[in-house]
Image (cartoon, rainbow, N blue to C red; front, side):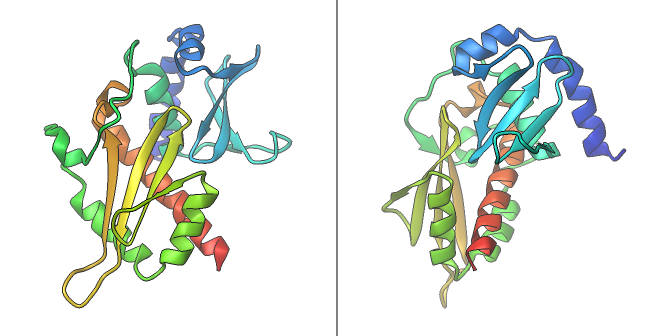
Length: 205
């Protein structure tokens, strides 16, 4: 097992120590005796209530795939870490504006690299964001309000490169995001969101 798989394995028993009824109530989750269900970036996930394994499906779980590190750690964190009375402020900010001291920094290099992959592909980007349930906003060359979870939106803003400036990408988070997840988890969530967008862009070609 690699370090990512080990981290997920360690998170599973920690998930089982938390009050699942409280999770269901807090986020209005669907649930049955076997699983909790949650939508994350346009996919349905189920968390096994007995062993904590997370799977996703796009066909009603006729078939299922095991969640990746970024998917699993984001879901575990928001279900287990989020504060009891977490709520949205309605104000969106960059991670840098949170002024949170961490080795992760503000993620500038991460977003620069991601912007390069989107440069010159606004029609594909817009189709991918729309397919994920996004709502278009009037900022930059294109901008979208996207449902990370049903109860937690993020804003993506993008500018193509030109003769003076490189391509630029911003992800804005609700000002209360740290009531929902740890700072480092925002990078797991962002990585998964951008991977889903790029997959959608490639499928549109």
